[in-house]
Amino acid sequence: MSEVELLIIKLSKETTDAVHRMIELIPEFDRLINLLKREGIDLAEYEQEYNDLKNKVWSIRYEYGAD
Image (cartoon, rainbow, N blue to C red; front, side):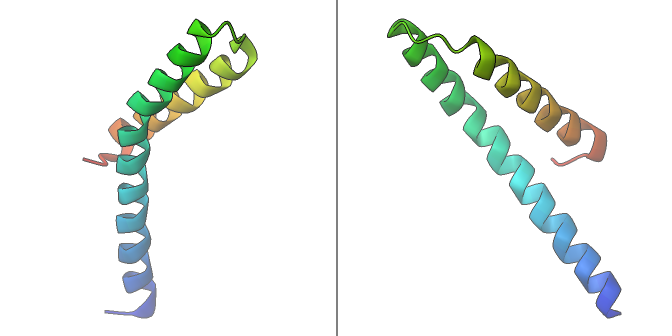
């Protein structure tokens, strides 16, 4: 295999691993947000950004088959 092919394979695996890790972290971030809300901390600004990021992660997973 050429250097380019090896690099593509490596980056593909690393990207898939990163998407899986982000998916694993989603419940933890959801829990943190809920705990902070219970403490009365207003997270409206950050919560929207987080939801946007979460949607992008799920979109990447489905679009590129990071299963």
